Image (tube, rainbow, N blue to C red; front, side):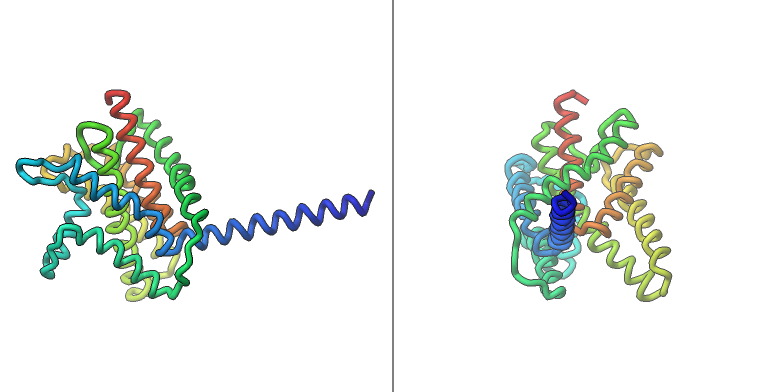
Length: 260
């Protein structure tokens, strides 16, 4: 009996080690730039196609775009680059350049990509709970009209806002606080999260059509920005953008169904 119990214990320990190893491999794989690029390729494509079909005035040729997208397009046009789909190409180029700088292998695990979708949905739940505490679902991107229009904007907001505030913003703040000012890393991370979160909240009031500032809304968006910043530091760009997309999509769909 003791031999049987010992054998079962050994099998259980081996299975646990294998599960932990698989989980570690997933966390490592899903944080890679190439995996993030593959994971976000379909949302990026749907945003570009959806903008042309649902968010463009056929007569005036006017597109409704996420503000972060317009900022990136304006930045690129400053250097004379004005191609229509250049911001999307810039996202692809940045992630590929990051991939090559890390010298990661050109290998993809499809299971990691599909698992990232499930993880992104689960990680959106804390924000939904926070929204419920406010008795409303507050999307982090502005859109009026049908849920499909909102979901299209959610794709763009998740990708371009995370690119601007987390991938670029946190990287620049890290260079400033850690590399230049030599601030201790725990303090630097706290400052990075706080500054990027407040900037993310303030960003939503930069459009002429933005509603008046409400402190509860500003605080919620600051908390959401802080949550995304911590998520980016712990889980990487792809999962963070996916969580942002999942939250905004749920908000737009629920508000449309409930007439909110």
